[in-house]
Structures are given as C-alpha cells and as structure tokens.
Image: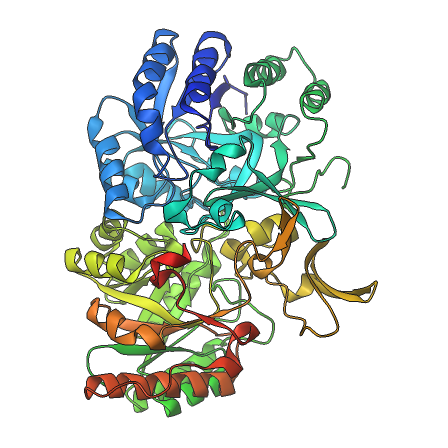
Length: 304
Length: 329
C-alpha cells in the first residue's frame, strides 16, 4: 500500500488551564504550529466550561484565520441534564465540525458529518461501520488498541472514513463521576474550589513505595507516562492511519508539532524526535506499550 | 415474580445459579466461559451445555436467564462474540446483555426476537445516549452506569421509555464502566477486551520491612501492617501517594449496598436491581439474594426493612451507597 498524506491534529486541552493561558496557547498554535486540525472544547469537567466561554470565540476566529480546521470536542461523560444541554447546543450549532466523546453526541449528530472522538468505544470494524452509517467521517481510535486491531479497523476503511491515532501526550485512562483532585484535597466535587487548576499537567500519583504511577486531572485519570508513537507512525501510515493527534501538555507544543511534522516529512529520524522531546521533559518517561499489545506504561524499545 | 421490580442475581457457575433461584431471584445473569463476558475469570462461567441445563432449570422455576456478552469484540476476530449471540438465541435465554455497538447491530439483524439489554459497560448515562441504543438497536432495558445519583435516575426515568436496571450490591467500579483502561495500562490485560480487571495472574504479595505489600504487575497497590487484613489489590481500591500524602485516592475497599435507600430507588422508577458478583461463591449469592428478597417483599407489603447491613460479605467489611448519594462525588 502506498503511504498517502499524513496530517497532524492538536487535541483538546484536557487540563484546567487559566482562560488566558488557554487562549494564548491556541493563539500560538494558530500562528505557528504545523497542524491541520485543532480540537477545542472542554472534555473532562462541565464545571470548567464557563471559564472558557469568554475566550473561545476569539480562539476559533484566530484558528480559522490561520487556515486551521476547527473541531469542537464534547464532554467525555455526560450525566446531568445541564451537561446534556451543553452537548445539545454544540451538536445543534451546525457551523463547526463536532467531535463526539459520549454516545449522547453520536445520537445528536446522527445524519450529519461528524468526528468520533477517542472516548467512544470503537474496538472493531462492526462498530466502525455502524458509526459510519450514522455520519462519522473520521474516527480517533481508543487509546488502548494494539497495532493488530488498528490494522483490522483500518482494513476496508480507506476512502470511507479517516482514522486518527494519538501519537503524543499523556493517555486518558478513565473518567469518573467523582473528582479525585477534590478528594485528594479533602473537598467534594460540588465545592471543589477548582483545585485542578493548580496542576497544569495534572496531579502526580505515586505508589506507596515512590514509583511514578498515574496522573489525576479532576474526574479524569491519565497515564503518568507520555505516549510517543514517533517510530510507530511508519507502521500506522502503512495501515492507513492518516492523522496523528498531539495531546497538549504544559510545554512548547509548537516545537512538538514541528518535530512530528519533520518526522512525517522524512526530515527527522524518530530517534532524534525522541531525544528532542526528552530534552523538553527530562523527568517524564515515554511509553508505547498499548500499540505493541503490552502494558500501556511500557516503552517497548528499551523493554522497560 | 414479586411486583414489578426484578431482583437480578449473579451466577458464576451452575451451583450459584441454583442458590440464586432457591434464595428468591427473579433473574440470573451469567456468561460463557471465555473472553466474551466481563467476568472472564479462571474456573468461572458456563459451557454451552451447562447453560442449556441452567436455562431449563431456571425456566422450570419461573426464573429468567440473562446472558452477558458484554466485552468488546476484537477487531479482525469478531466471530466468538457473534457465535455467543447465535448460541444465546439457540439455547433460548431470555435476553442478552450487550455493550458493543457493532454487536448490538449484529444481534438485532440476526436475531430480532432475542431481547437485548444494554450492559453497564456501554456507559449510557444520559437521555440522548439511551435514546441512541433504543432507537438504533431496540434495547428493552438499560443497565445504568454507576455515575448517577438517585434524583438523576428519577429524572432520567421520567423522560425515557425503556426499563432501567441499577446496581444494588457488591463490588463498585468508581470509574465510568467500559471506559476504564487503568488495569490495561498496568497489566496489559484489558477489562473491555479480555473481560478481566486487576487479573489474579498479575497479583503478588511481598513481605518487605515488616509490611505486606500487595502488587499488581510491577506496582504496589497497598501496604499492610501486621494488624491489618491484606485485601486483594484491585487497582482503584489501593493506597497511593499524592501531594506527599498516602490515601485511598480513588476509593476505599468497600461494597455498594442500597438496602438503606431501597424505597428511594424504587420510587425513582427503576425496573430491576442488580447484584454484582459473578466471581463470588454460592454462599454469597444465597445471602445477598435472600436479604434483598426479604427487603423487597417487605417494601411491597408496606413494611419497614428489617436489616440493611451485610458487613460480613462486604469488601473490607465496609459498605457505601456510592454515587447514589451526591456527596460521594
């Protein structure tokens, strides 16, 4: 199979950044990052959403002016009626492409072109086909899929639905009704005081004997490792994956995007990319275990 | 059958099925002995012929059998899941409990008369999501994820035209079900794909400096002194360190028990109560089903519920009403 064009996407900011920081991040992505698509919107906690309402219009405008495709991401877990209302509003707008991260959004977007986000369980070609029949034009695959599953889903998808895989960033592992950030600080979710904003890259969780373990981001739990699929992009492109998602961390994401773009363009080796990335975050372990059918935290190259 | 509220009991094997029926269950739910169900533990579940006998026995006693086929079929290898649905129809179970969208579609297309329930693993936690499964796959009952409070369940039931089933007792997922890769991240074995969380094959207990460490894979999940009983290292029920403080960050070892709020739940319009624990023995099944049977009969007769606690069979000896009370969040 020939390897076609590959595009980069900037995923939605999963952490609770201040509205100014959030806006400035997207402005810089608009101006400088070699990404084709940018996902915008609160995915993790509906309580955070009002803070961004004041700046999201400016962000979308700036991204569009820079020629980026803007995709609005929905919440990953919709529970209360208020949250249903938020998703309905997004789905009804009609102006932008929407990424569905809860089945509620899939229901509301049926019959319209939309993106299936990585929080929707697409484990096989049967589900892929049903979602395509409802209007899915792009699927960002779940994080824990191994290469052979990605290949099987990609087989027969070519030209019918575009496939995206997260190539960079902490891996979302779970979402809950309970807020662990608040719980860790002795608070409840309803009176959380937005303590999650104190940790722009999430709260580190270690085992009792001090081994780095997980990352907590409010109601979401993520990997402690940063998943980097630089080397694996060659295989993924061969399978038919055409789009690679970079999930924002509190670092120079423009440089991250430039690095991945250079690898896709054959201007940089993936090993060099890994070195560059490691220099940005010397204390963070990299992983690619899910892709290789192993424990998600494992870095399959070094065998750790 | 007592009233409209069904008591749904786990049956990890034929002995548990018999115990559940004897103790007064209206339905039992169970799985085939493979990766097609979310309790794929060694020595558990039913062969085809065991299921055939179990269904006959249950039906002879006026009890329904629900078959959980509630993991996500593997890409490129969907056959075992399709086969499970075909066999369920052939054997004549009363319903299949499904999570995967593709599998729902297959079941509806191939066996339109086979009743479909939506598994908790599908995480349908709101009106629009539930509507999707009802309209697309004609599901007759939705097992609600353990993310909703009682008032939220009441509000939901007022707006949907489908039965809802809620968890009443047992092990408690604190994460939205079917959307958790924690165990997969640590052990490489996925609850969604292989049907096992915190698998026993990856559990070790290690003596270290006078403490007993419980480990899952390479990670310490808890540490116990001489005076503490060492529990099973279920990943989200461990003690971890954040902000230099050790705590049960996600949840204490505890069991869900709704006996104390049973009238509230019934009033919220649910159709069925589900007891967790296909991995538990027949003694557990007997005791929990009997307690809930007695309580349901009492409520139906307008009497108070006599006893509400079941500490001797609760994880860590502790009970919670979980997310049904808002403060839990």
